[in-house]
Length: 74
Length: 134
Image (tube, rainbow over all chains, first blue to last red):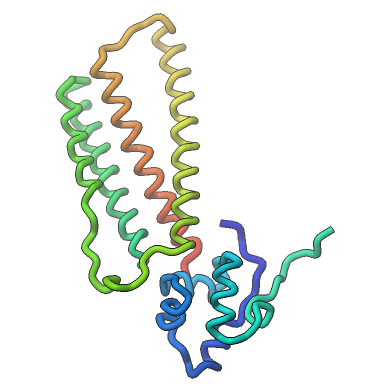
């Protein structure tokens, strides 16, 4: 798996949404809790579809959840 | 621990155990057609681990699918390299025109299949560990 160059605000957004549990978010977006844990730890880069689902679960845009941290395209 | 990592650990145990017993048998009794019976143990690969807490929950998602795909690719790479190496080594060692008993061919095929399962399981565990939360 490539090292994700993607930062995310999932942990903070969960906190802002009434301390939503990882379990709850996982159920809402259709993945396992382990995937949410891996995402929060920055160890896994989600598919575009999952990124949109997570953003929708928090009612924000994808850019507010995920920030690209890699080099600029040439 | 993710359900499929637990399953991979079981598969690794079964394949490792089967190969160890197989090599013990052929070490004790030399190559023998009956040694193929050891591969009957691979039937344990079909055992599904009991689901407890996961019941009703999602246990397979895009990350599991990604890991499964990468592990399969790793195991097939291992198979191709091992098959080419084995073919070359035995060819040069025993001579390209030499013959082997039919049962020996099947034992090698069985052992290779078990090894491929084992490599896939080991790679699966490694990928789960690498992308674990901590």
